[in-house]
Image (cartoon, rainbow, N blue to C red; front, top):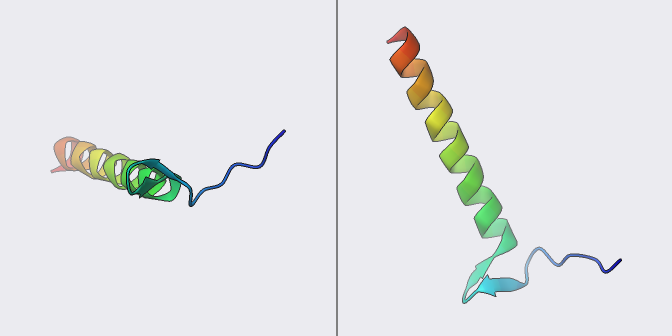
Length: 40
């Protein structure tokens, strides 16, 4: 099994780390928005 290189560009200049950080930001934004809707 080959080691996955997190800093290897996937789409042009974007790396897997960039995608992971973007996904985490989106998830946290959705959670925050949901909490605001529920308890706001």
